[in-house]
Image (cartoon, rainbow, N blue to C red; front, side, top):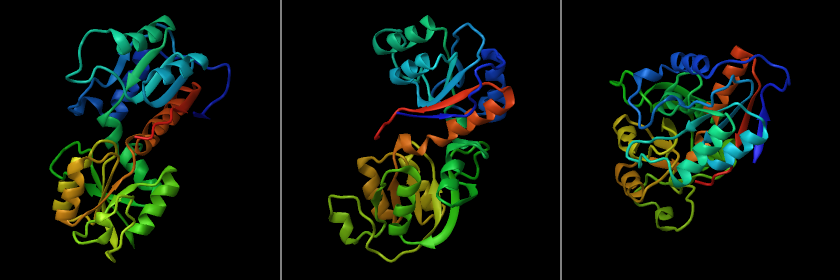
Length: 280
């Protein structure tokens, strides 16, 4: 577990959970997104917020770290109350929410609005980390697109894998878009045996592997996301588009950090990013 302190002053102003949420709702245009979970304030801890912890997912380990940090609020990308999950607050869900309420900690979460934001979104921040420039939306007819298309200097899949590894601290799983490539029969992370140069890259962080077909429709040479499914391998090979599975967690650390930095500057409250390691 690593921490990154944005502001470390012990004495700081406070902000209410409602004011903080309204600021984020407006900045991220949260109401414009049809999402899989509620965006904004999910658990009201009932006290003024003087210290904030940010993280990718509101797991129990993050809650425990926030308690140890004397935080009044946790802000995450992956919060609670997802569509289709059981409603009763029991078991693991009950344990998490009980800890929040017993310690007066508010939980605030932003999912798709944090993926798609044009300045601090996960896609934009990943593109910046990979020395790419966002040029257009992956779904151009969507008024609030989540996926993006970026351009980079023409390079091989091997060199792009190296850049991803350096930026994210982990090697991506690469599936070659060459249907006949020898590395498509290997049981390890391929680093490309074909000579195709990659320049037009589709990007959508997290569990967006099925957007690979849209990336192919949009003429992308490669698609970068977080997760991979069994079907993704065959889609990449048959559509002739390289695929890089870079880790759900690893591709979605930067957006919430950027949001925390923005909040720290705007409200002058201490914000600490806590990275709970996750290999997925």
